[in-house]
Amino acid sequence: MSTEQTERPAETSPAGSWNDRPAPRTPAEWLTRAAEVGAILAADAVERDRAGQTPYAEVQLLKDSGLVTLLGPVEYGGGGQTWETAYRVTREVSKADGSIGQLLGYHYLWSWAVRFLGTPQQIAAVEELATTNRYFFGGAVNPRDDDLVITEDGDTLVFNGRKTFSTGSKVSDLTVLEGVLEGTDQHIFAIVPSAQDGIVFADDWDNIGQRLTESGSVRITNVRISWDDAAGYVNREFRPLVYNTLNLPAIQLVFTNLYLGIAQGALETAAAYTRSTTRPWPYGGDNKESAVDEWYILEAYGDLQSKLWSVEALTDQVGTQLSQILHGDREAVTARQRGEIAVRVAAAKQRAIDVGLEVTSRIFEVTGARATASSVGLDRFWRNLRTHSLHDPVAYKRREVGRYTLLNEIPEPTWYT
Image (cartoon, rainbow, N blue to C red; front, side, top):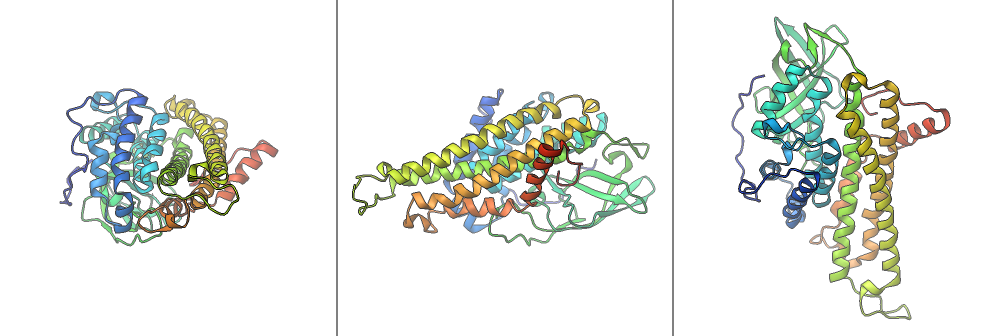
């Protein structure tokens, strides 16, 4: 795979460097590192959200902290951690900044694309390249658009087309492409350098939430790869495995941890505001000296926290189960096993959305009118969660769980299940 790239803006991480500190080795240490990154992001999250600038510095922070290499092999300088830890790290970063949490979670998914689909030789080559260089991944694979058209030119494949959404690709080093070989029904995935003349970003992402994800459209023009770099193809043939389709449950659980993290961050931020700024209500007949003594505030926080804890327990349980499958034998995964974990991911996702939207909306009831000030920025949590939760209709996730419960049916693999 070619690694030649054109110039891009250089950014310095606001964290400086972790080079003088030992790299995290355990899941707990990685979560501590993620919390440190979150603290840096939280310090100016409101201002950065308002500015809506391309997050070069934030991605550099993810690189400097080592979070981008969490799943990478230890022999190449990676963390050698499991998806169970990657999900929790994504959630931790999302507490502080939903946009950067999404970018990190998507990076983990796209960096694993070669494991979902690739040959052993491709896996080794991509993981060494990406981990050694702390490369950041993006993807241009939006399935609601027409597939990219792939044509053959001798031993070369040429990608052309447009994708409406390309989250993170503008700030990435490597981009995952997907297309269909012209005249066939063969889908082909490839990993290519992001900074090249044939990949042009329209800079048209202007949504109410997840403003720093650079999720705008991209035009792909004559991007070329060798047949040898077509993921999973040997002698121009692809042997499918059930494991290949686990990318969908995997990314749906990224979504779940994103939503849960945003909601947890909202409640924590609101609680800090309530403790420091919210005033008690003076006309209740039983006046309190502090807002933290108000019965309705205590009741609301108790209700919302309990709901978040229940979602967290379900999400962690599903994360453990899916992680075991993702790190297991690729040849051994069955359609039934895949379908049952997809149902459990669907259950966790729809609960995270429902509870997350409730939390991010109701926090204003326990913080007060002054908390609606733009400078406080509590609205960003709801805007972020509402925006991304529309990725695919949550009602279909409930239907999947319902069909499994009533009919013992598992969902067929699709681009969204």
